[in-house]
Image (cartoon, rainbow, N blue to C red; front, side, top):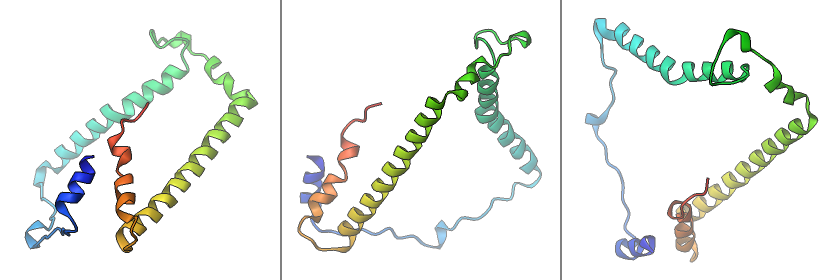
Length: 140
């Protein structure tokens, strides 16, 4: 409903972003602080990515993730990879993902081309229809 009201209020107006030379990005010279900033970035990388990934991998080799000890390493969680059903499920999941994303990409390309480059009478409703995923809550 909001999109329809916005379309009626704004009509067929066109908008463009105007930038000038003042917006050009330039690298900032950090001088002697560049190694301190680099160290902080490496620390953030370790905290946010490397440590959780390490804990995930180590936890997959433990009998329980509550108490990680050296004498409780096991490969029992990885035995499922020997089951052919798991591999069929993986291939099926990847196939559905590739096909769905390809079809979605083609549909979005076609609809955006119609909306931006043609004067077809149904292009406005198609434009409103493309906003539906943003208006409807997603299900997880």
